[in-house]
Image (tube, rainbow, N blue to C red; front, side, top):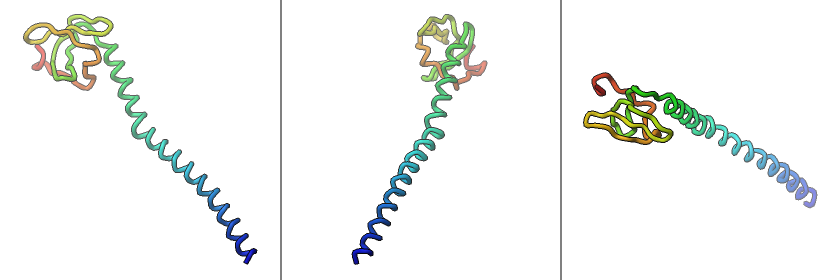
Amino acid sequence: MNFNNLLLNQASQETSGLESYASWILFGGMFLIMYLFMIRPQMKRQREAKEFREGISKGDKIVTIGGIHGKVLSISDLTVVLEVETGKIRVSKTALSPTGTPTEEDVK
């Protein structure tokens, strides 16, 4: 019986060692999948939005994230003055939507 107990203990120790490696591989795989499907695309969108905001010039027609269509009159470090149908408004550069593209009808 002692011999059988020794064999069972040795087998369970080997199995627990493999299980700990398997759990590390599982956690690493989950992190990799999360990085590829969540973190990396978000970083790409942030980079594109930053490039869009830096590339804005006077006279560009843009849309804010709130849906306001306007034409750029002046640009400062943090804000943009837009000409809208009823006058002028000042908005933050972070409020400009990189995906919103106004048509000629929207902004006159």
